[in-house]
Length: 214
Image (cartoon, rainbow, N blue to C red; front, side, top):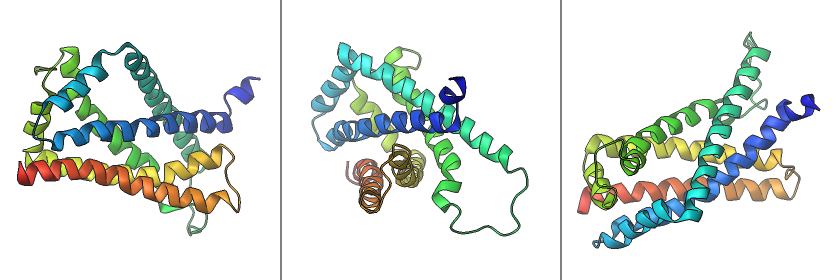
């Protein structure tokens, strides 16, 4: 039983479910962030207040943190196990053995984690009172950050890397869950590509518009 529960296949399965749960949240977060493009700060601030105070959202927030921890932990464990199983690199790599996206998943994932930490400091820790700021006016906080050129560039780079991570992650997750055959594989590839473009581009447009026009 322990071998089944803690096998690599089980870890991949749990990691896939946690990752898909996180991917469901991204469009919601993007929808709220798009309110930053409105000149009236009230809709965004009201949405942020709702997300911070509504009891059901608080439960979802806990589940999100658990999903992040599980996804990162299992991802690291599986990557380390993979490295240990191949202590000596191949002199010639077979291109069909693994895609470039797969080989660099750990690094693109690491960049996303770094951005998450920065994001927590700039927003979530303000809500908790750990970092100075007005939790009732995140609209102003976002505008201050998006008027800093260095932060905007970092934001773009991180979402570019997130897009690369998402493209392979979606395909890998559905394959782990058993949706890999002649019909579903091409469909999942198209969905993965569209999602991996739409989400990062949606997020990237927001600081661009604020930086240039607001």
